[in-house]
Structure formats: C-alpha cells, structure tokens
Image (cartoon, rainbow over all chains, first blue to last red; front, side):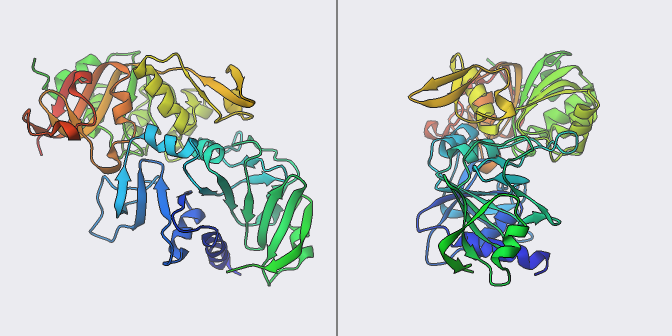
Length: 219
Length: 217
C-alpha cells in the first residue's frame, strides 16, 4: 500500500463504525476523509467544533462562503437541516456527551487507552484546540492513524508524550487492523489481509491480544 | 445614546497593557478592520484572549507578528508559526487552554460565576496548578473565569442599539466575549436601523455593546 492507499483503507474502515442518526466529529486531516466513504443509506450528522452540525462536503470552487468553514478553516458547506451555534453550545454538545463518536489522529496511544496528540515538547506545540474536550466528552473515541510513524511504533505500552486524555480511547483503526481497548489490554479484532498477526505484533510496542474470532478487516 | 464611532475613535479605547478578547476562529468571524487599525496604532504589551492565533497574515495573527502581545491565552497556535517561535524564545507567554474550557471560562466571566468544573484536562498538563474536585466519584478541574478590559467582536447585522445577528460559523466566541469585557466594540458587516432586526433573531442583546464600527458594505 502506498501512503494514499493506507489513508483510504483507514478512512473506509472508520466509516463503517456509524449508524443512522449518529452525531460524529471528524478531526482535521485523515479523519476528515471518512466523510467521503459514509454509506448513503444512513444519515450521519457531522459536528464541526467551530460551531455547527450538518457539515457537508468541501465548497465547490466559486461557491465558497467566508462564514462557512470547518475547524481547519477550509470552505465547506452546511446541509439543509443543519444548525449554527456559538462555541459554548458547540462544547456543550461535545463535552456533554451528545457526540456519539469522535475520530482523531494520534502521535501515540497506549494499551490503557491514553492518547497523546497535542504536543511534542521542544519541537511542536500546536495546542490542544478542541481535542481534550472531544476525547473526554464523546461516547466513543476512535483513533484513526497509520500504524507506525515511519516504522516506529505509535501504539505503546505507555505514552511518553504529554497526554491529551487519560483512558478515553475505545478503538484504534490503522491500515493493519482494528484494535479495541479493553480492561485486559489491546484486542486485535480485525486484520487487513495484506498483513499477518506477527506483522502487527512487530509494528506494535503494546501487547496484542488476538481475538478468538479474528476477522478480515471490513473495507 | 449614539454607539456608532469611527474605527480611529474606537481604537483609542485600547491602550498598552490591557487585556483584550478578540472573537473569531482561524479568522472566521474576527473583526478584521479593528485588527488592522490596532496593527497600525501599534498598541503593545497586551494580553490576548482568543480561540487561536490565526495565521501570520490574517486575523489576530497579524498582531502576533507585530509583537503586540506580552501574553496569549488561547487553545491553538499551530497555524501561526510566529506564535510558537515567540513562545519558544520566551518573548511571549502562551497559556494553552482546551477550547471548551476557554469558552466556559469566558462565559463564566460574563455570567458572574466564580468558575466552572470540567472533566477536560484531568490527568494532563492542563491540570497543573489547578484545584481538583471529586463529585459523585468523578474528577473535575476548577477553571476560573476570564474577563477583559475590551472585547473586539464581529457581527453580520448590527442595529444602532448594538443588537447583533451573527452569520454562519462566524458566531463562535463572539457572543461569549460580548458579555465578559468592560468595553465591547463590535465591528459590523452591515449596520441597520433599529427595528430592522426581529428581536427573535437577536443573538447578542445590544445592552452588552458600547461601540459599533464599520457597517459600510
């Protein structure tokens, strides 16, 4: 798989996690791609933390409106039936448990469900934006990322970077497979046909528990 | 009372050393004309409270590049490398706050609350120096209110009493900041006569607004 195929595999698999009527927040970057693969048979309501629900596709050239942008500042659209609101309402929705799922990238995630994605001390300090609230408040936290950073494991026994939140991650979806965080540790539930369990173990620092009913990754 | 003033007059209310809230999210819904006037005026040693520091060539990011802040309270600086540079070189103090906590701290400031309790940031660097409380078995951080000397906000339609209608995602922090500063200056995209805004549509009541600028389409 090349870089682009990796992203598509991850985005397609994440898109299978939602059901009709779910309120979902997609992070900037790879998570945003998930919107391209949502089933037309279900209505998934996308929340944009800068202040609306009903986030639609990117605005077409010439149709951009300065007052409709996503949380990354890109011109987007709002679907009919959507709603705009202020930042307190936006985070009432997020922190108050009214978001069914949030999809974010990670620098590191560990087998206790801890997440690090906002700071590399001394190198990169973009700030947490809305990530800390999203991870604490959403009913389900899905980490969508490449399995390793240029071969170096990102799924660890214990995060070493500053945390975004403690024990909030529910699911990790990478190009290699689908992993669930459980009280016993990380359970590999699905595996991409191009990889073996040994490949995944070699690319993961955390201990991997292989599910008894391990399935091929649903893409 | 007449609230409509020129931009030149409006910026006389912002002086060195003040704390200033600026509405907008990556510049969307920021008062760009007021920001340009403040860049020109060169007022300095300000404390900024804003969701993010936008871009070097847009929004409050221009004031960062112009080195007008001694302290910045914000949730995100990743789109403006100059903010990061000033933070790393210790030229500017940067206090990063989770976005939802920032919104609630401002709301608390405007609503007369002594603070808010949030689960966000528990177990992270954000909890350092903050009081923790356990209620019903769940841990919360006490986040204290934020207030400012001046709030600079942006409205789509503003009537001459200062009632504001926001458009789209430009609302963001604007209505919260309108409640939490001693002086509130709204930059209007369009100024309309009293009566032209349906009271049902008003998102920020005019009683919060001291001065209105702009309004020419």
